[in-house]
Length: 308
Image (cartoon, rainbow, N blue to C red; front, side, top):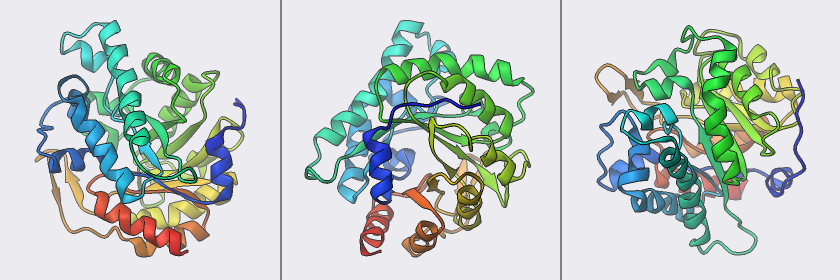
């Protein structure tokens, strides 16, 4: 399969050098005092406290982030319907996720040479279930069924004109295939980012096979990993680059482990700016953090990239 989109300012920026992604949106919202103990997670705030989301985005811009990932990871028509929101209202909230990131980017004093880009988050099917299944995959659905689930949200987000769609935290190859089918023809470039364990997807498929799925798709401007151990990301960056020849996107967690049953983080943080040089040398061009990586760590990462 091959789908193409015109060359975009973002893809040209990647040719000039690496860009810093933001960090975990949820941990920054919690630091601002927001309660995320909800099946909609941060997506609840799109309706209830949108200014908090804009404030969180702005914190990452001040830290040096050049790409902001929207709050739509867990925002789905099905999830909003369970709260009594009809399709029109849900579409409005999905559009709002892009608008909030745009406003935060526009309000930042970054200078003409430091444009801030917006990546509209498209989370996996398991995120809608809110039971930790995005860390397992294999939901018992066919590729066609997953494609039907993802397409309406993708169409709404694409119509909001983000710079890129972030197909992120994808746990298995079947869902990746469904997502790439769903984005075909939407006119917006995408990145494809798996959640992994070691050198396999969460569902156990070899990473080389998983990345190869996007190798011939011109709509995919970067491939890589997120929401994983920093140590696992080290090897994954090289595999992604060698398999596809595309720029690599990498934004792992802090290194602490999420206990889905207890709904809490355990262990110690191992994320650090010292990893940046190796990731960049291996082909990473979009570099940031995911869960539990806050503005302080992103500022350190931005400084390390500038020094490199």
